[in-house]
Length: 290
Length: 201
Image (cartoon, rainbow over all chains, first blue to last red; front, side):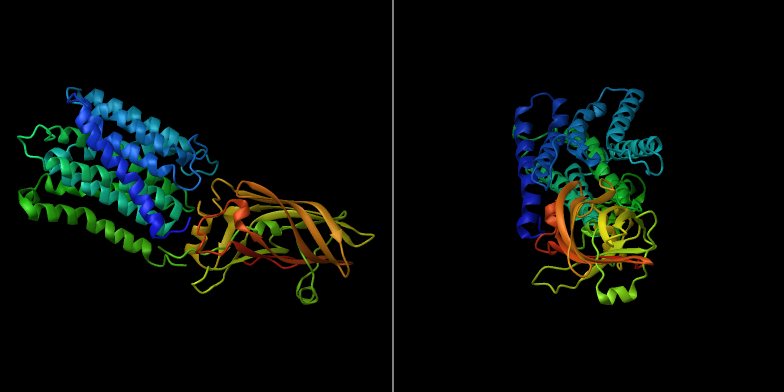
């Protein structure tokens, strides 16, 4: 498949439209406050699946290890239950850990020459998933929530660039589909958050839904970063950096930068996440032409 | 997006062919025959490929090869002709002059060496021609696809052993290597030389 304007549009529009649509529809239809937790994650999973099936050689029955990604996206929506209020921290940690281990077990390939060996790689990947989930979960409460979604989408988009420039256009397209899905729920959330508070359509549940999206980001974008890391020989661990970039927002959750307000806070937060990502792209892009 | 280029697979195919044109015969060092067989390895055989960009870009050919493979050519000592050819290539040993290109060719965009670490060729029929020329037909398994291919080869079986050269092309699309259409030409030129050592890069 050539990388032309038509292809790029297909990679962006096909995932984005169902993601936006499903986020809006579920936002209206799903009644219970707790159930809203699954709205955005479901929209991302649907958008990713829509884009995945139009990619070259889609496999609905996993044959290659990365064919599990759309299923991990769907399963991670269920994993959002571990973020529900009222669940004790020990239970939450154990549940999140089990989800991370199960996801890693599916995604880590069984190559004979895999280094480190598969059981160790599963542990490392599970720890990566768990770290992403645990470290990102508190951030929406401390920062402007909808903006947080935009930065997650930006991190996913940069991961797509890193993979395409550094290794494989096909895997880059896969990550672009995921980025478009996150962009879709960001746009949907932006639209919904602009409804006036007195309007019955105002999504007071949006912070809950954003919380629920964190495990989806951890497993889907973290999983894509793992694929982009492990598939090349030698591995390219720089790919693992992209999903970690939003953790720079912790600078604004505590410490002197937390005092920033309004537009300056938004710009600074965006810069903290995006600038390191752009540096990574620049490093990978050097000499990428051939 | 970076430009992709091509090079591909046929390398495998090569496995088989060879020829010995006069020029090559001069350069190639005969590989000894033992028990009617010639053992192929990177120490005595070269498997190369050349891919080009699609218009409107300049062709800008990219050359590459494989550093690890093993094979066997069975020869008829009486008629000094080829009887069979088989080759197994370690696709992860692919090399080019450009590291980034090597990485890209190994990716799922082309060879997908993680999923398809081996490429093989097994001859099914060899038709002898004049002056050492032959047509080799066989099954090339590459990128998870097995297709029958035929290619010309020129071989010389002498007292010191076998030399062989074959030049042909394969269509990478036949082996489900469709990525980059419009950017990288589907035809990949292959050259196999028995009697020359592989020299990566």
